Image: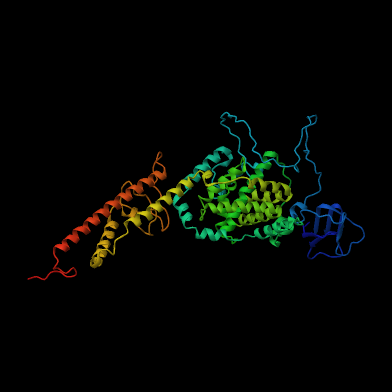
Length: 553
């Protein structure tokens, strides 16, 4: 049997099920519907749906097989969640299907209730070392184990964590933080900080979720609720085909697993929003790399304790790995995710389908679909909209600052600005202030000033006048104030990498400033003394023309 392509729509009184069955005989098909059940059969097609509401057969059916709603005016939720509609009817109860006979009654948390986003605190217990450590879990809801061990060759280019099957979550996090610190490049960060024209252009891009979000807010501004968030977000035919290909299944998740699923969703959406902005919606060969590299959930199989940890991890990775490394991109992606969550599960599902397509077309990143994204695409269709709204509000209440990222960004920026100010002050002090006071000797003063500049450029510390170098400028020959690398125009020189125990960056830059000012001051005094000597020589030989050599007798 084949499952035909189908879609559902509704008006206040009728439910319309559009089914495409090419090459089927129109005279040989059966349709059955009663309550929440809908069945269609036309050889070789068979379709069975469990509707989110009830319909009734009251004699008004026509050849188009429009079914009347049992309750006129009722609005059916989730008609665009095609995978969820393919589910067989089952009892909606929180009680497990397998129970221990004679067990005491326990209160089972209702999945429809309010979700508690507070940190779950458990006392620390030191586990004894065992030579046979159990396999560590990962994947959607931490439900997978032993997968990477079988696919080590394929996943080595996809994930950063090595041997996750035997690496506990705490060790993964320690290794991730160390890798981020080693990867952080102050030169690259400060180059984007001072030359942010490209970043500002990225921030002006209008992604696809902005228009439906503005429409939703306009409806709320007029004191009326939008009829459905699903109506604001539509799916293409390709996306509908993706939904029909997923296998519908249920997920048995406890409270901790449900929290990890929601936290992982935020982390993945943050990476997606960054990727969508920097590429302006045009996917390229780097899209798969950006998505998995910016999401610690996908790259390190990270698990989370609260939302703040997610934001800190995403902020650090944005400033360490991609092409554009600016804190404004972190905050913009943060606000974009809030908009998507407020739009509801249709918008979230559209993002996940896009991610699924990117990974599916990239070998071997498609394995991440099996571990995470496919299950997310099925799970989100059954998630409650109010949970996503609660998640958006919880995300909105969590602030993020540069100081919380642990990369000394504020100190780095302050040091760069200080060096920039000192450079401007040094240039102003060295500029001639009495160029017009010499009267007839203007040409000679100009020549001596040019000589002075040439001598300063040849001086040992002349290339250290400030934090910026012209493109292709040579490195200083030596000295304590010398810096260890040269970057392109507009990039700050980073302090040389020294072994553990080196001084903070702000102190090294301070020493560099003091040395530069001393060199400039001594060279300026020597130049002034040289000019006075030349003026005295000219006054001692008044008959000699300054522009000609004396004639020989």
